[in-house]
Length: 106
Image 1 (cartoon, rainbow, N blue to C red):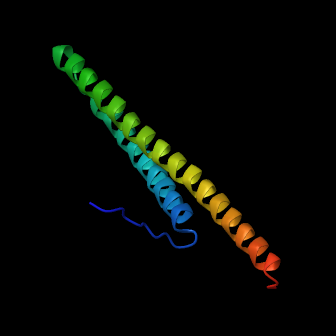
Image 2: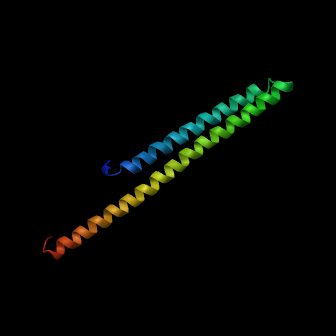
Image 3: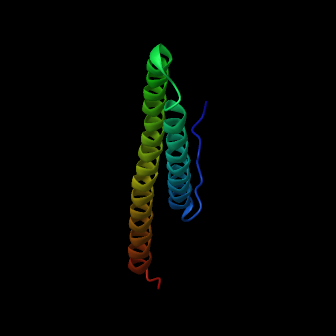
């Protein structure tokens, strides 16, 4: 396969990071609500069932935290890439301006 060019509009990466961050915030709120509801349900379990429910709850909480962490890392990567993209774009613009002025352009 040949090389593929990826085009990114101005601000697209930063906007994507904002969308991921909002999704992460929304997910955390919903997970916290669900966690509270699970605590209420847990109060009704007794004996071996209570232990099994606790194990499921711990596993669920761990997986939910992992998902939030993934979104955190994704947002951080997008933000970092956006900064690098902006820096590279500015550097290219500066170089082109320099070459243009050396050639007598404005």
